[in-house]
Length: 241
Image (tube, rainbow, N blue to C red; front, side, top):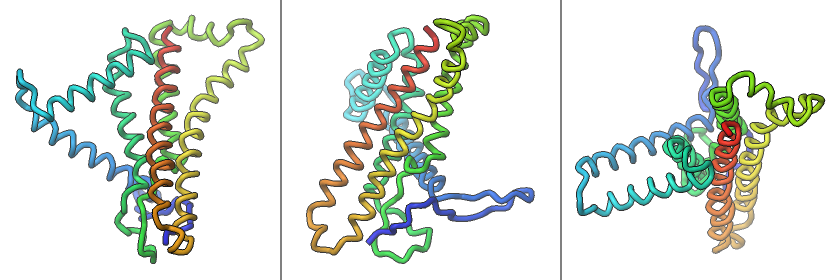
C-alpha cells in the first residue's frame, strides 16, 4: 500500500536565527536528484577526460546527447540562440528526472508505516514548478530589456494600441502561472491516481501498475518536460526578437 496523504510533508524544521526553516519532502527529493546528476556528470567527465579520435562508447553517447540538445534548442529558439543549449539541457534533464522519480522506491525518512513507498516527484509540488517558471519569467524580461533596451521593451507592452497595456501586462504575469500549473497539475494528478490504485486489493495490482507507470510517469513525464522547456524557450526567444 501507499500513503494516500498527498500533502507536502515536512521532514525537519531547522531554526535559523530565530526563523523556522522547513525542510520538506520535495526539497529532500530534489536534492537527491541533483546529487545524482552531479555524480553522473563527474563520472562522465572522468571517463572522457581524454577525447579520442576513435570515439569510445561513452564518448558516442555524450556526443549524441549534446548534439541532440543543441539541435533541439536551435529548432525551437533559432540558430543564433544555440548558446542557450547547456542551460535548457540541464533544466530539461532535471525536470525529466523529477517527473520520473515516482518510478523509484524512496528511503522512508518520513517514518510512514507502509510496506511500499515510492518517491514523490518533486514536480508534484507547486513550489518547485513555480520556482522554475519564475526563472523563465525573469529571463524573458531580462533578455527582452537587454536586446531591445528599456524604451522599446516598455513600448512593446503598449502594442498594438495603448489601451491594451493592462492586458499585455496581465499576459506577461500569467506566463509563469500557466507554466507552473501545467507541469504541477499533470504530475500531481498521476501521483494521486497511482497512490489510490496501490491501495486497491492485491489481486487488482497484477500487471496493471506497469502500464499505469508507463503512462503517468514515463509518457506524461517526458511529454511535460519537453513542453515546459519548449514554452520557456519560446517565451525567451520571442522577447529578444
